[in-house]
Length: 58
Image (tube, rainbow, N blue to C red):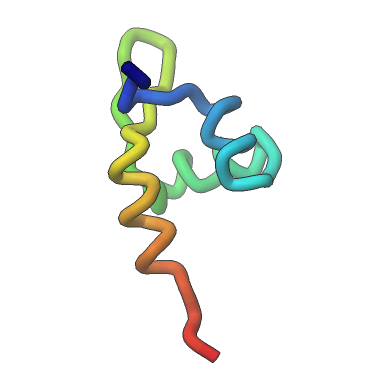
């Protein structure tokens, strides 16, 4: 079973972007996240919903 929570590095790979780009989205609270200690965890379902909202129709 695949975990719902993913790391910043995994989120960057999932979105084909960089770790600094994900960190920037987290620092501006644009991307939903949970902080566990010093680690940021991103819910894969929240990430998919966020991505759907960001789509632009041609």
